[in-house]
Length: 70
Image (tube, rainbow, N blue to C red; front, side, top):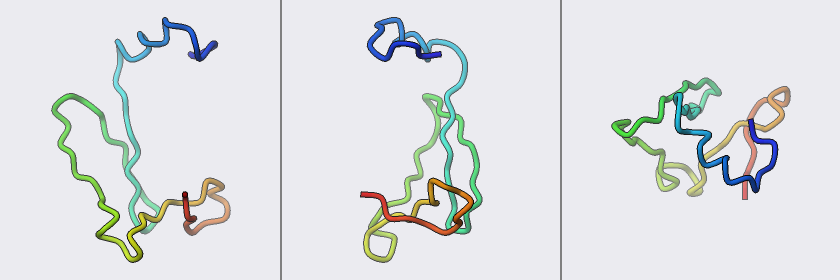
C-alpha cells in the first residue's frame, strides 16, 4: 500500500507478485492481461478507429457507453 507517494520505498512495490492491466473491448467487455517480460504487445492503434480516437468506457460505469478523454 502507498501511504506517502514520495516515499522511496515505493520503488519496491512491484518487486513481488504479478501486475495486471485491463483490456477493454468495443462492446464493454474486457479481460485482465498479466504484464510479464514475455507478454506479447498487441496495441489498439488510434489510426484503426474512426476519428483517430480509442473509445473508453465511462468512468461512471452506471452511465454506460463511452466518453472522450483528452
